Amino acid sequence: MSFQYYEMKVIQWSEARKIIPRSKPLAQYQKLREEVDELGAGLAKQDRAETIDAVGDIVVCLINVCALLDLNVTDCLASAYEEIKDRKGYMDENGIFVKELAK
Image (tube, rainbow, N blue to C red):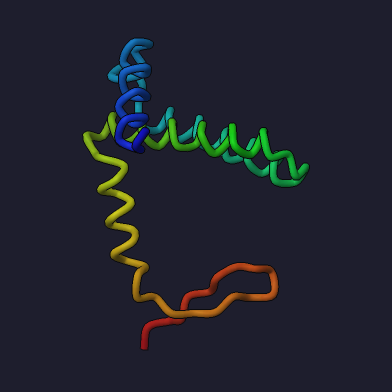
C-alpha cells in the first residue's frame, strides 16, 4: 500500500472519531510532542517495536495537523526537500548534520 492510502485511512479514522474537525492544530502538536518523547524512550532502550510505534504515531499526528490546516503532508515534505536538497555541511562528532552557513 502507498503512503497516500494510509494517509487517507488516518484521515478517515480521525474524522470518525471527530478529531477532524473538532481538534485544534496546537492540540495535535501537543500530542506530537508526547509521541516524540516516546520515540526518544524507544531509541534509548533500543526497542525496535516501540520505535516503530512511536514513528507511526508521530506521522498520524502530523497528518492530523495538516488536515486541520488544509495542508498535505506530501506537499510539506516536498517543500522541505526543496529547501534542503542543495544544502552543504558536515557531520559532527555526535552524528548531527551541521549545515554550512550561507556566505
